[in-house]
Length: 404
Image (cartoon, rainbow, N blue to C red):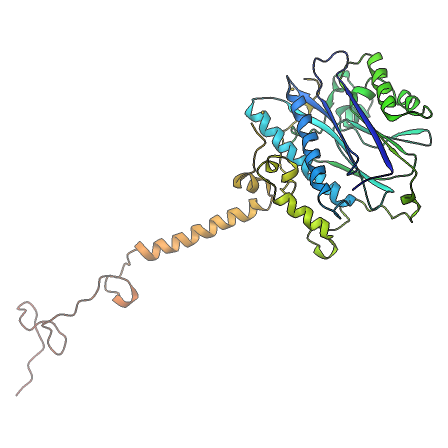
């Protein structure tokens, strides 16, 4: 599997203030997937969180290489989104086990379609960004999930500097993680930039465009110039950039296919529309080995679950990646909250009637034995032929004797 129309480069730098690098990036040109993550938390918590995201994306890419025919954008984006949500559960568990108040990360994942080169998809959580340079114009394609961008106070112009580093979505921090999903059109000569806020927080979009518009510039050189510019501006945060250039290629000569919005491609239960490669990919993900089952990529088919709560403050912040057990799977499935109580109630009702039938005594002791109530009736041995009791019982008057 190869994308001959893509070329890429990346670079990550600690900056001039921080003592460690909590950013992480991965570029997978063989499968058309590129990711930048910006971790947050005290000590090495942010570094661990962003590393988990990048590691999960790598495992996803490895599985994708073995699944020919599954390399369609709708499948890649769907499973990547599930992978990010599962990573959120893993990070949350780590934070709980190590008593970390904050351990999370942002992420931007850009993926291309092998069969339809004119379209791509982007998933983003937090305030890391995706830009596109087209015909000399730089455009931000993602929306920042930050208090600065989303709060009502900021919309009214009552922005406070303390809101600058507060993000409203983060992997591993927020409950019911929502991953922003967007489809993009792709043209030859497009240049995509994925970056952490250590870049755009230090230099303006105009400065970024100025660097990227330099003629005949190699991508690794452009990455170095962007990092250098951010460091010259103060380098207050970690700086990570990934550049992806779309080259002219014969694959773009075909009739362009219309963009299909996320969610309109049909459910994975529509087996008639699923390729053989897609079925194989599902099976591979479900049959993960003992090692791969400890990664988020191997858990991509699990329901999305929860993370933490409240907004996360960047620049402030543990166990192996868990295997989801029965109770976690039930807790993460919304339908279980209806089905499980109904099953419990039904079992309780059955147990009640069984106990009544087994142990309850009837009020009528003289009920027939064949109905299962009262004491078993014993046939008197000396009963006379009329059934009025034994003739030798002096306390019982029998019927008058028949005349001879």
